[in-house]
Length: 246
Image (cartoon, rainbow, N blue to C red; front, side, top):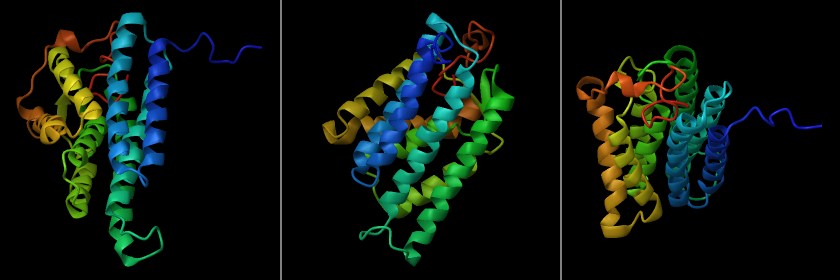
């Protein structure tokens, strides 16, 4: 008897599932090697964009949108929340201490807002060329790039994480990235993953600047061609770096 998923999942869905696996690896790596965990989060974001390219090239399955949101909970909700938590946790393990209260609260807030954001995206934003609130992929990219860029001060990361948590459900509209801009950002992201310390952390810093520019100025100044925002099925382009899902 064949497993029920045989014949129902496409190539793009396999990449989406790989996104979730990368998120789990980031969770495992976070307490051991935060730098590796940050790179895995960024790699998961690359997979999140790649599944859209494959869906447009080889077809989109009905389960793809749901799979993407589920994968994103792991890769862009749980993984970055734990990454920041472990960075901010005092040395000496996880013994209960007053110093743990703030990291726990911030990590929980980020995860709660990410799950809420993904749920709202799945119900409200599929099929359009924009999304409301900061995308979980963008928030996770900012945090991962910030750490790789050398911003390792725990309090700075905690404040940034808290701000991103609030912005994920804020009433700001973000257009999907143009294909050209997504490609450029993807190349920079790949270099930030492959050689994060090269030229004085050049590529993570460039990625951080680009992500923050879109974060701050995207809702007001960024415009994208409406025709480029549609997938063959008539919905939002799957896997757009500025969208939540496939």
